[in-house]
Image: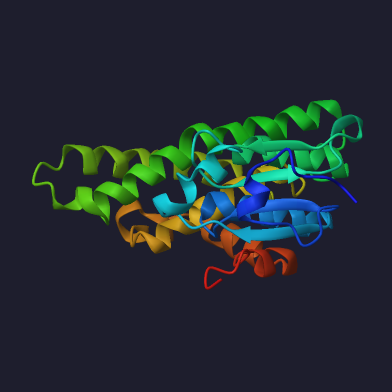
Length: 233
């Protein structure tokens, strides 16, 4: 049986089965990237609910694994060379799991980098910009009288949606075959529903994006993983 004692997080969120991948997450767009990948790839794992409260993500236990205090994070007890490895940043986790499983990272080296570029597009563009849109359109920032920030992120969300919509012309998935790029991107596109921002960003007027998101969440592994870990504990 694997020994996870070198990871202080395992004391607060103990592993029932330390021989499988340990997932520390909450079902946000970033959090479900990891659970979706694990389900799609058929990798054995154990989910641990880490809420977004400071008591969890800013605890010494969680910071020992991710100093950036963001979910998700994982521990693979059988990492490279057979040694345990801890990882954070959802994009890095997706690439790691795809390489470990040999799935959803393209059929050729060229395909691999096309997939990775769309993962980076989500990580550097869609995630941060949509997150700011949510803050200024739905949450605390919406109370600001000056519309400059709100209009900026609405406009940027519209631009990014147009990029995605054009890329999806004539194909079902963002990088060709279904891949970790879709696992990264589709949950964030769906976040516009949570933010109440579909109308203001023109989401429903797009030719390809709404059907793409529906197609993604219709996949059995995705439907299962979107509520893992169970937010009710």
